[in-house]
Length: 204
Ligand SMILES: C[S@@+](CC[C@H](N)C(=O)[O-])C[C@H]1O[C@@H](n2cnc3c(N)ncnc32)[C@H](O)[C@@H]1O
Image (tube, rainbow, N blue to C red; front, top):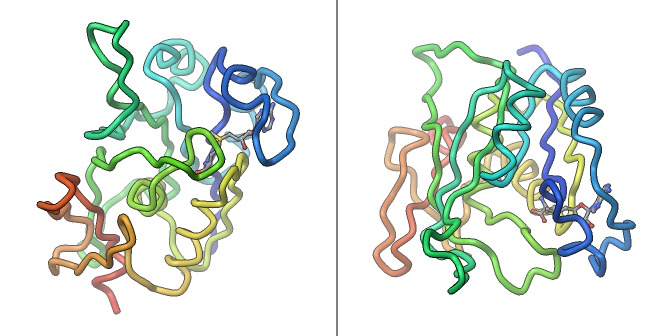
């Protein structure tokens, strides 16, 4: 199994650095990210993914036209009465390190449905199901190296640890049983959330 270099970028979204990250627990100065530079950095990796807001999608795709777009759908999301149409999904631009499917490995959907997090300290901290899905989206394998370029709460690092340990995807503190078809979504009636079961669960 060859080892590849992977990156996930979850920067302050375009135009939102000061609004959301002026008092971030990381202590990092909240300045606007240079997205041209960031895309150039991401292109040095074998595979990458970048979270974004839907209004910035056109601009970011103009910088990285080679990227595919996947969706994080948020059944529970920030709700603004001033918006008639709410922002209840987010795009993820990605270039997979291993684009081709094989019979020996479960494939992955280009969307995940998971509720936003609350009370994590970092604005926009990603839910565990999302983090597990991101790693599958870029084709991560345990022997790879992952750089989480904007770690915030460290949620993606924990997902990486789960992948390396061959552990289970976790959603809202509950272990999700694999359905035997790795990567398949599972309805959770209690939360109306679709969980995510990593294919690495079903390989053990
Ligand atoms: C969207 S959050 C990352 C959330 C993370 N993926 C998680 O799940 O917790 C963005 C992070 O980048 C930091 N940040 C803000 N401005 C930055 C900048 N110009 N350069 C680097 N990091 C920045 C913020 O302080 C915050 O911790």
